[in-house]
Length: 211
Image (cartoon, rainbow, N blue to C red; front, side, top):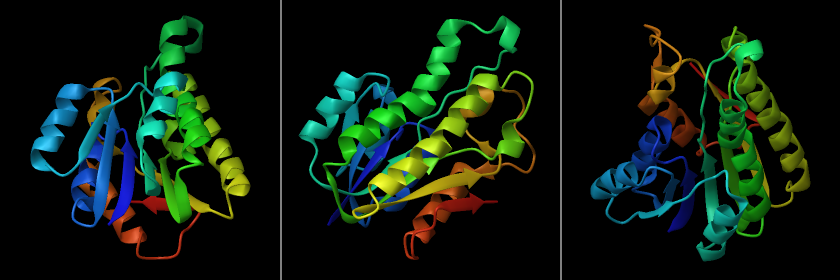
């Protein structure tokens, strides 16, 4: 059975993906929230759960040391702390950068040795038109960095794996706790998960627009 690693499995999209993939992949589920990971495992008893802080290079290095080879890697970690630039705290800025960008950088650094030939990598991005708002400076900068990072990673690893940047419209997840009211036309996490799952049956594309 193929092996899928989901980093951010305790979040809305990561959790939905775990359930989509459970029948066809052996799962390694990574996140910071141990309680949520345990709840997820109660529904997916054959999955392994590995609490990990993606902001820690040491923890991510240790994670990949213990993992078997990987056929599918999904990075769905994200955080947002809306603040005007002139009022932004360094702690919140670093938190947003770490979750969205730094963790991805360390993930790719240590994942390369474990990715199988023909493997696929999906990373949750953000559409520029949906994040160009007051207070979103740190988040928008992080997501712009994500796009640039995976473009270069795709070039460096093109003989082994393919990269897809997932670009959903507004999605009903815990993201909105820090932002405001969920839009009426927001996608569900399951809809995004299904779109990613369905795309696995087709040739890899550089981006996957959902909704």
